[in-house]
Amino acid sequence: MKKVATASSCLILIALSQTSLVSAIFWRECANTSRCICSGTDFKLNKLGLTDRMEIYKKMYRNCTVVHGNLELTYFEEKELEPHGKNALNFLEHIEEVMGYVLIAGNKIQNLSLPNLRVIWGDHLYQPEFRYDENPTMVKGEYGLAILNNNLTNLDLSSLTGEEELPNKIYDKNE
Image (cartoon, rainbow, N blue to C red; front, side):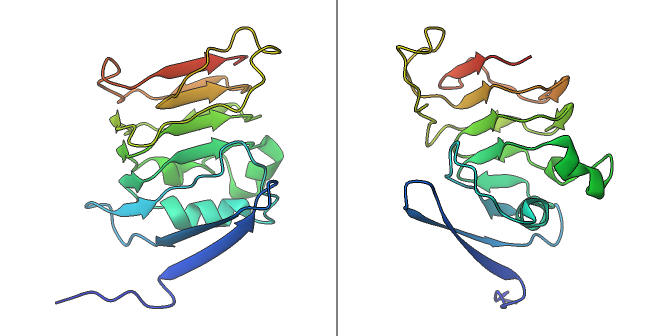
């Protein structure tokens, strides 16, 4: 039996970035965790200012096992998570693979967990848009995993394997 996406199972979000470029995210909600592919994002370090970003992220990543694109977890704050309870980000727990890059940046939360993330393929790599003359600790390059400017106490990437094959990693100013 062929499954057809209905209007209720698909969602289109159009967001304007600071550079006035229009980006679109297309995704479908995953019904179970057997192997569900969902779309990633390509916003890099742009703050979107969405009113209920948590609900959008939940719909995008709940039961998702493979992110087709990038996984960008940026600018989360404790006050944003409080209304959703102490396990507010547990919808990320099923992610096993990311086809592009993983960007974890600017978060002001204590815990972030991707306990089942096994591999980052790096089909598309993150290129930081820093002024390297002002950031002497930064190394110019392209990265499969970028963890930047967070106030995380605990970051769980315990299942991540194959780091020797990961295109590049960058960690900077994580306190």
